[in-house]
Amino acid sequence: MKTAIEEKKLANQIYQTTLKNLANDVLTYNSYMYSMLPKSELDLMFIVDCTGSMGSWITAVKNEIFAIVKQIKQQFKTSCIRLCFCGYRDIQDAKIRFSIFPFSTNWRQFKKFVSGVSAAGGGDEPEDVFGGFKSSLEQDWASGARYAVFIADAPAHGKDYNDCGSGDNYPNGDPSGEDLEHFMQIFAQKKIKLYSARINSSTDKMMKKLSQEYQKYAGVEIQQGELGNSVKEFGKFIVKTALETLIKNQEEEGVQQIDTSKLYYKVVYNMLNNIQFNKSNFDFKIKYDEIMAINKSFRDQDGARDEETEINEYQVKNQKSSSLFSLQGIKDKLESLILNDDKASSSTCVQANRYDFSIQKDSDYQNIVRWDKPLHICKTKKEVNLSIEGIPFAKGNTNYVFKLKEDREERVGKIPIKVKRSQKDDLEYYINLNKDIIIAQQIYEKEKFVDFCIYEVEINNKKLFFSSQPFQKDLNNYNKFASFQEIGYDSDGINKQFVGHQSYQRTYGYYMIANYYQSPNNSKIFKPLVYSLDPKVLLTLQNQSYLGIFKYFINHTCTEKCTQENDLIDLEDFTDPEKLNFKLPEPIE
Image (tube, rainbow, N blue to C red; front, side):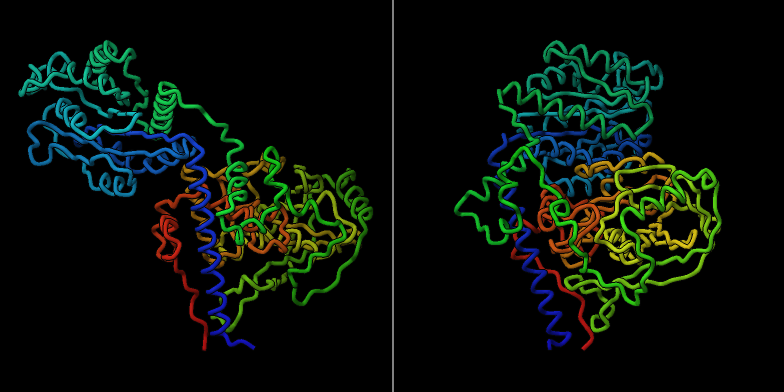
């Protein structure tokens, strides 16, 4: 029998191998994908007034840059985005007149630089727009698609550009003789698409003049985003206009567009058919005929299983048998007790047993769950007073949904619409039916990520079991089962990206919370999508196993939230899988 130390070394060796194999597969996928897609290069510049009143806009550039880059890359997966920040203040601010970050593909360094830019300086009402544009044109413009956005809340010096009167220390324009109209000509000649974020009316006179001059040479006016004082629409405006710039550039260069909806299947197909690709880790995890069927998505493995298959991966300790009902018995009971009973339409107060769950931990591992072994789900039981509304307020694809109330807390209870004949209608069945939620709950046990329990209620000498979570205010979520889309990089998407990454490492590569639904009015989640590395583990919605984890990581980029966690591997390290190293905590000797 292996000692705890030996078990720990074996578990860590398995995890290291799994992680490096995953990294190799992701790198291989990306190399094939890049070879199949047209290359896209974009120079993306922010020309920003950095005087005292512009603090919120500098922060917006910093906060939105990751989402901007990622959303552009979602549409142009092989795009190389070079970022530049060109900040200016006023002429008399000699020591801090400019804040320049030259073109670079490193968005983290860009964000770090912008974080250090302070909104300061400025004397009279106008600012040194001349210096800002001159500095921007001096940068190393190199990509085919070139984009610059001008963000300012004050006009340039000179009565031709403002109506500040005595509030302008340089009413005749730039003292060094610079000419904004000439700058517009150079922007057009360099084929730089120029955009502007309109914050207030003080810049209208200047922008009208600049736009007219730019149109003479570029053939189009400067497009302005009507953002007002709201930074919320800033990121959307940048993404929309930057994508337009890329698309226009590819059209001008005659680049043939590829249908990206089938790209994943084509890439994997090419990987598996390349004799030089090491398929030992990859192809046996994927049904080959599903790769061949490019127009079909991978089927849920649960759907192909025999209905008589018993679920035995999860053992419930101290389980007591409860009443058993056939499929018809369940249907009759629901219809007679709840669905078609007029008297049941009002709330019924009953005594109920509430079961909460935890996963038994290995004492030899300092309370660490051995995720690679069968999970022992333990339950605690307590009696509660429960109020049940007799008529379901929603019907999803798989459940009837009722309103419940335990003491004063509003909750929902779910009863499945269909029950397999081979399954026992007892507590163990409901645990198995909801084990994806229970696993998600235990992965994030300390954070109280999921609030889930099962109620056992006896009505007319027959037992009902409700799987229950806190009531979500958005009722539409109960009437549908929306498909899980690719996770974005807005604030909600960044949290989900982090949860997926951290859950994978927290369980040593055996489980991943790939997505979930969360009501905006409740901090707890419901409908988690969980993958297990072990394809034999049956999960309620689906278990895409290694394939699901792989698909997650080919679309994942570590956010700042990921990199702030010291125990998380930055996926940029995937560029050299041999450097990947993650050790399990030491067991008790």
